[in-house]
Image (cartoon, rainbow, N blue to C red; front, side, top):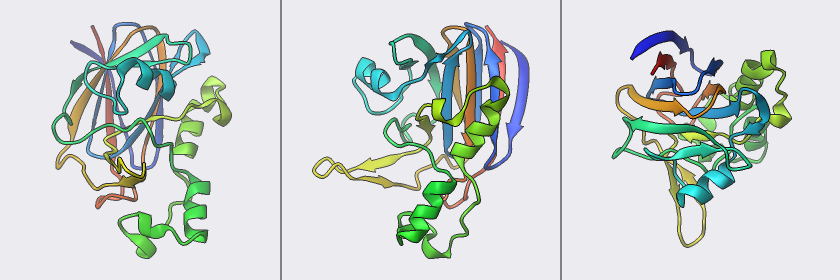
Length: 210
């Protein structure tokens, strides 16, 4: 494959790029990535968690699965997963952000995170990162879908339905390869990942021609 773009998104920042159908996006990381995708010619055709889970019959995003839009249009397919066998990619949770961090502190729920009351809350998170990354394309916050949370391994209690964050992450950066099924606008946030020991890390993003 011919690499046509390579970037590194620092911790707690956003990134966005356009892709042509058939191109491969390689994400290299060991931290949570909040990822979204849009049809480049119609931003209303955005990734949607519900039809994606219905089509795959799975609450996790796995190799061979495709992210679908609300109308069921295929957007991007996970074709290689370096996290396979180590953990899962979450399709249940939303995205962190300034308001969520503030509410957790006000409601005394910081013990949901690894560092508890000792943590220093960031002044922004994935909601803001995706908003800033997509602003040049005219996409407002209210039109950004709930993301697929790559590398976010959630423990789900089957009896109660309670979701608990885990610290399961790759020990070293691993690659995820995603193939564009149509012309796309893709974006992600390198999450501040306050539930992990690393407290978030940078994310490598490379686009390859097929």
